[in-house]
Length: 105
Image 1 (cartoon, rainbow, N blue to C red):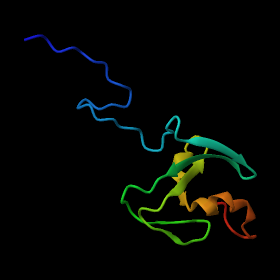
Image 2 (cartoon, helix red, strand yellow):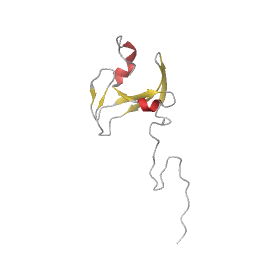
Image 3 (cartoon, rainbow, N blue to C red):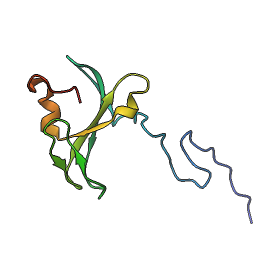
Image 4 (cartoon, one colour):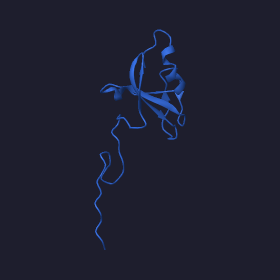
């Protein structure tokens, strides 16, 4: 029987071989940074394939049902990951047109 070949583990791989990503960290090739009048935002498109929980969109204050494709965004500064918000895609695109007195998110 030949010996097993050692394989280097990736930076986000567990000892059992499963991949793990730090919560809130950017995923290269998936996340993008968008600049707008309200600052820089890290934006991630979510396919909605995972049957997770329902979220409340800060743009229209309506529910984003599980399975519905949407956008997750957070400020592009250090510690901004704690301020992640789930938006309907159309609400995210039209956030600059929101009326006065509406909060940033």
